[in-house]
Image (cartoon, rainbow, N blue to C red; front, side, top):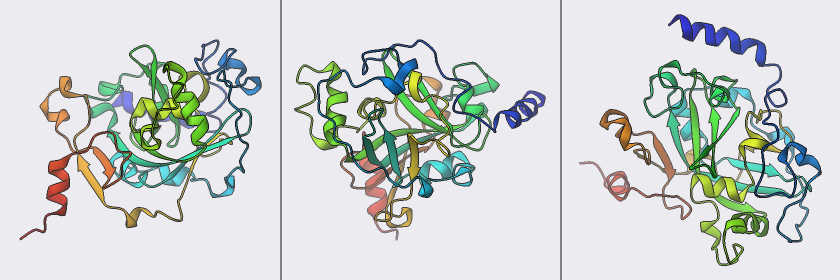
Length: 279
């Protein structure tokens, strides 16, 4: 308990500036020709003519109060929100979040911060709610999380419905594909946590510890055409955490939009129970 209180006190000082102090340095990017430490002056390595589109008004981006809530609640509230990513050439990519997973922090065996394990890797999970936590899996893929209210807690963004900038998303997704992404269907562009990061060019080196409440290149907005209360949320178990034991593997902490084609893994049993009228 003392360690947790100390962690909270240390966080207060850092809440003035999150996006500049802790950037990764000298890390290589598969998407760009030069080091991502100089990301503001580089261009995509794929030879594609990227269309410049109007940037959505930053005045409508979600603020700290939205993210400053319990992890499970935040995971549900994120569904239907618009995720904006501004590339270095000014093009705006956008998609609607359709699947999330909650990781409850120090008490959650499947969470990187379990037991109060505070390392350089999981530092963003202890930063202010609304901080991007980007980490690498299998030595080559990235996952995007957003810090929530509890110490060391966050929400994993598992899938997104692509809405704007699809040609660039296909180009980025095609970096490791022989077809250059041309054979990918629209719903396949970001129907998984690492696919989403590839499509939006999200890497640990360029967006880890980004403050999404103040950033001009990475933020969330409400979708006027898709309010949270207008969607049906399916509750299921998280993916790929069986090794942490049945207690945490079976906790219902994955949430997704019913009927959306971009969801990574659908739980037919949960959907059936949700749609079956109770007697």
